[in-house]
Amino acid sequence: MSQKLLHQLKYKNKPEVGVELGTIYGHLLKRNGFASHWDMVVPVPLHPEKQRRRGYNQSEQFARGIAEVLEIPMVQGLIRTQFTETQTKKSRIERIMNVSEVFSANSEIEMEGKNILLVDDVMTTGATLTSCANVLLAVNAKLVDLAVIAAGRF
Image 1 (cartoon, rainbow, N blue to C red):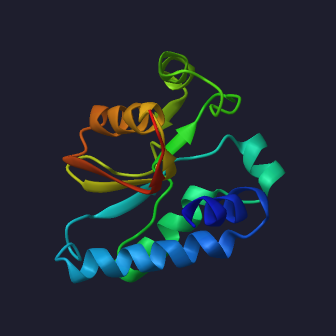
Image 2: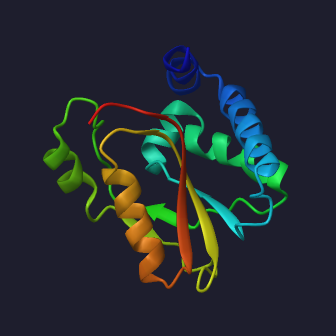
């Protein structure tokens, strides 16, 4: 089921699927005592060229639903500085190397001392999320937690 939903979200021009999944996830977080745990939600960014082709960032749509339910801002705290090819056919090591230096912090967003919920659509090896979390921690975010729609095999 989650695989079909993700396919709709990523490849069938259905950004509303991401928002709805984020809304459901946000309600689960709220019911379990996490309503005031984070200061902001930060989606993993797509490269502008990839976002232009797709029309939207699926992780941002998921983040939007979570942020709305938790009543906290969703911010573009990260910038993807390099285009990378899809990671779907890469090994764990290739994935880590592929994203090791492709993200930077958005200097327009104050993240020092903030508790951040970092959001992506799928986690396979964790390479992308690790790279993004390291950038946020390097600008002195107090805490970085992760939320994903699905986790794949390593």
